[in-house]
Amino acid sequence: MKDLRAYQIPFVGLKLGEHHFNFVLESSFFSHFEESLVNEGQVFVDLTFDKKERLFVLNFDISGSIKSECDRCGQPFDLPIHGNYTIYVKVGDEREEDKDNEDVVWISEGDSMVDVAEMIYEFVHLSLPIKKTHPDLKNGEPGCDPEIIKLLGIAEAEKKDIDPRWDILKNLSKN
Image 1 (cartoon, helix red, strand yellow):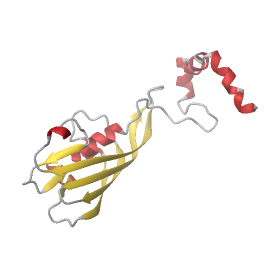
Image 2 (tube, rainbow, N blue to C red):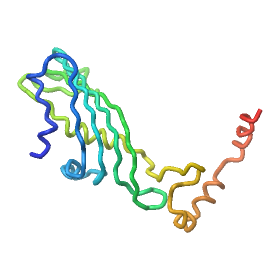
Image 3 (tube, helix red, strand yellow):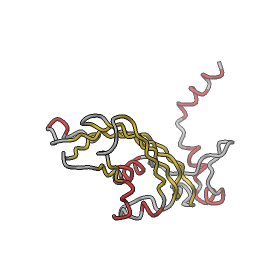
Image 4 (tube, helix red, strand yellow):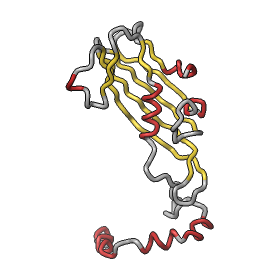
């Protein structure tokens, strides 16, 4: 993981207050993680590093797009992702009350840098939607290949799955 040195932030020389770091993630970043669900894409990370006396507040703003396969039709497409995440880094010995808090990371007194590579990796994966499908077209039709949709019979199945009790609610907006 030598190539991930760019994601190690030396905080010893930083003054108190906010500092900004920007990262561009591409295939080379994700190749360092064996179980990555992301292989290709371009993701931008804007990290706001707020240094306080014995606490660092790290705000990650993640945006970009990755190559993915549509869960509906199986065709590749660019999936836009976005997410905002916050991590608190405390200096010292881990306290009992923070052991179950996933948003708090402890580093020892002797550390001089914070490694954010794994945090960024996890936040990119948390930004992935559960269902990855082509964006719908402006007319409301699925953006998938129409031939594949026709072969799978998905359009008719989705129309049939609508519970008729919900039809009453459609009329409420017309009054």
